[in-house]
Length: 543
Image (cartoon, rainbow, N blue to C red; front, side):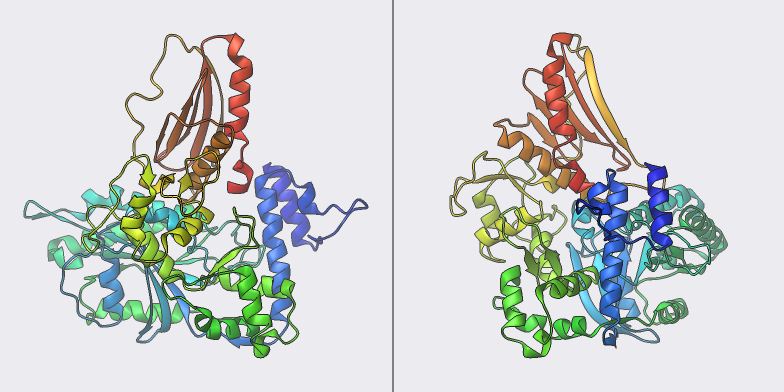
């Protein structure tokens, strides 16, 4: 697979036409067999389409993306406020989902700040935005903590902090594939993508006594060097690191970070058509509680009602323009839908992040929500109504969440959207660990068959959204055959009938096991059938 991928990269780099057809009309994408080659070809197709757009009139992009990354409680929201010189009261209020705000930062300019919730429950929704073009990522960790009235030495937390930083960099890389340094050292990938820029911030400087500060700086440098050496081919990690009191927006070190952000901003041009749509998209929102339109409604709004945009624009060009805006993170565009329509577009992603994913995936620490889901395997429609009903029409929301594969109906046959008997599995709310009574060693079941899907190296992992989607599609494969899983949990599921099947992802998201087992060789046919369902399914479209 790697050989074919490298050959494909070499051919494309030297001018091979990604859309060339053979005598039978087949394109390279039709002939591609491996997932990575298909992804690479699709990226080159996108690059080719975007290059055509950029030959037309362009406008300067004056707002850039800034992602605040890190686990819960490290000070991301406080840092966002400090960059704006806003006062904080010091109270920790966890961020639900993603808080999206457009701010002006002194010495740096205007940014759309994406403040990401650190809790694992929300990570799957983050993958929809982390691939935004030309973004800067601030990854924050706590240089020290106070425990039992004593400040922990930075060296004692080094390994823990290094693991946290590496985990976030792996997460960022997973959503920005095929980014490599060119031989010319231009800092761009072979397909023209700008490498993500990362700044490392160590918070809680205010807790450090003077005697620990030199040690803290040494630890910060070591973490940055390890991160750089591991990820230098995939992202630019700024050499300077910042030791900050994230609650004090007036200190000198915060000012240095502002200056750094200003220096890192790249001047970026976007197609003028994209600029026009960005200016007007909010006027197309008919219902603020559900800022979602179908593709057909979107096309009608532009081509029939807006002459300024529609002039000389056909639907294929509009699709390319819309994909470009999607890649900027300004809308969410889903073209292939479960319902069989032409697609849906979320015109206001902040609504989805904050008003839907926020309450939907909130745990007990999110006191801002009076009603939250209690973690269990199956949820009724009334459960969803209780938590999400005040945000929008629950029937519309259920349909949208099914499109995003954030929930899955348990019924083998479609039910009316208004049927109150509907029940659902929400993969993101399943219990974390495998139940104790699942997949125990068995004296009877001694015949094992399976496969393992393994990431290439320590910089690779499946995105946080991968397994929930995989789980949803496996559930669909079983349900359409009139079968049900015997158990589901956050990173696995088990099916048990005449033979047993297990799909399991390791906690570091670097490997997925698919395994079946039976009592004797007489059941090998049933094992093969189940393995085919679990291994094939819709896996190719998820990976």
